[in-house]
Length: 392
Ligand SMILES: Cc1cc2nc3c(=O)[nH]c(=O)nc-3n(C[C@H](O)[C@H](O)[C@H](O)COP(=O)(O)OP(=O)(O)OC[C@H]3O[C@@H](n4cnc5c(N)ncnc54)[C@H](O)[C@@H]3O)c2cc1C
Image (tube, rainbow, N blue to C red; front, side, top):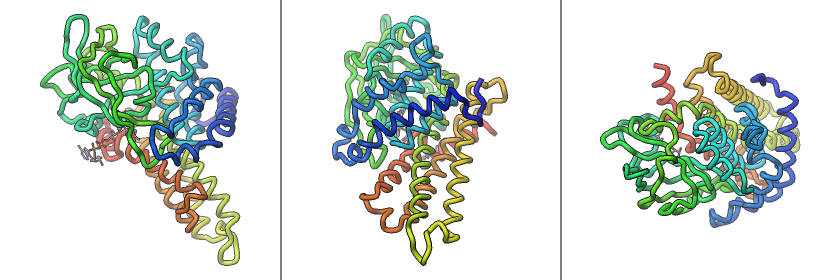
């Protein structure tokens, strides 16, 4: 069993692989992809295929399924490392690594036999989860008494799905999806929704707009549209009307994975800032020797350390829930990490002076990227309300 605060030999070798992938595949092209105008063009299949070659894409599959069975802590370490090279790539992989874990835990044997090879056996296999709708968004986090607008009505042998989701990470790129739809009229989404497994080729399922985002551009987010889609009874995950239980039971590490991504990017910001402060001379000495700057950079280091410690605790606990799991750990780590990262990004930008604002240095991409997690994986205020509900 891995230790929460010590990186073991196995994890170190996995991280070495990710560092090589970052250096050889992602770092050389990230800025150029980010700068493309059309959000569709910012995504690179070449990077995904190389992630497959490096064994990253499928590393959370068990050895029986052809992966290395990375546990939640190891997965968070990988996601953080990816975030150092590019936030978008970290998100594309985080969604895939996380949902692959869930497929192995939440699906029946028959469902696994069908859907895991579908994702595994193509080097472009990616995974996505569709919850958010234009009118039903934070309601999901605060469990407000309202239904999803996307509905699945019972028909012979299955369900007829109608509606739409938006903002979905990997929405236009995945080949297997987890989708939440309202199956019981007159109930809230927490009590009357069901989780379905969808394959990309489902008749009546189309991809809508690809969202144009200010950052995290190497990942695509898109709308999913459903028009009279027939989904078989065999594609129901868990129990009908108990979709939320799937999230509660099988997503404990999800929030910490989001935190890991933004910590990775904030670490890149921090490292650049240390280098900058050592080499930039003003007032007769390097910036790092000015007490105000020096103290602020030390505080960045501390914030990163705390955020990382929190992720390690949450991910280790997620796999060892009998050892004192606190459900608020499924809400807090991302709140802390995203707030810390935003502080770090804006401080770093200021420490870089005018250069912090200029595209040529590359820091501004990291600032735009860092903003993503103030908005993604639940807006922080709603995550605090979710945690409050659990605590009080
Ligand atoms: C980059 C990105 C990737 C995403 N990926 C996915 C994905 O893969 N799958 C998916 O399903 N979703 C995804 N989302 C959606 C995301 O998880 C958020 O839930 C969603 O963006 C928040 O909804 P909204 O924008 O409609 O905000 P709203 O729900 O309209 O909230 C607006 C503001 O009101 C506050 N607020 C809302 N309700 C309350 C309340 N009851 N009490 C107090 N304050 C409240 C919120 O905190 C927020 O500040 C993604 C979003 C982004 C930005």
